Length: 342
Picture 1 (cartoon, rainbow, N blue to C red):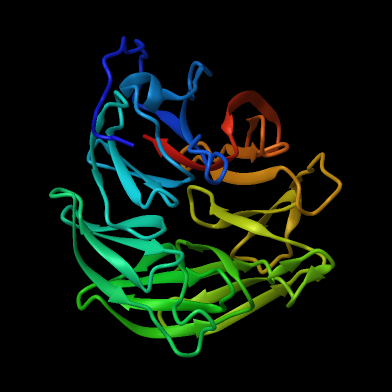
Picture 2 (picture 1 turned 90 degrees about the vertical axis):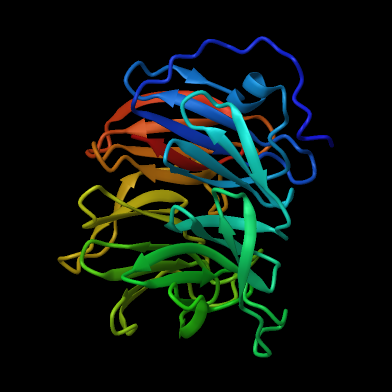
């Protein structure tokens, strides 16, 4: 596909206020139907397929994540092996970063340096967002893993250290020194850590799905609390073997967790309390349509992405911090991630 050859088209006139929400719609694997939706938080207007409608350019195959820096949005497309760059206010195409294997998430170290994790690559890519070039790599190959490499995913930062969960058929959280670009430590957790956040008290939280099979999990799923400074596990909350928890988000104060385990749950990170139900899912099975989660760090409103049957348009549910319904709107196929534009 000549993805640099932009077609002539009439661009839609969309007013994008200061605060808005991007919904990253994964699309179906090998179908090239990933898309971006933009939601006006104040007016509650939703605009679907804004990237294609603005640029007459398909977004790509399997959109994974997005991050905004200095007015530019970086959309990570894993099966396309690239990152599209667009103006966060106008949706206009500004360039791309290519040469990646199966990128997952992007984390900025500075304006000229960012890390890009990879599901299948044997390294984490170091990129210069300004020159749009890969400038180096961090080796994550290992003889201990059955695939001879760690599958890196989400990233959080504590001082100069970057922590990344190794999700696919793995049980490690790698610790990277961002000054030397080297792996300096690893933390073993339950099988398949799928998410990673760091609260306002220097505690890292990860949630593991246990390696899901039809009859349950291959190991017990868990919610795990790790001290970022000592790298010691401080608390482990175990789920049932038939559970399949995914996603993990924090509120604006960084003192309350939210996660998906069929239903939506929440938990105070300070008191040591147990998770409590926030919103009940309409799905009877553990692997249901609830597929994505986000928390507005200004209002603490919660957004839940429902992929329904993973074929038709997905639906987003918006709730107050007290779990009261605010809005419901349709987006693209398989909504998976969110990115706030503050």
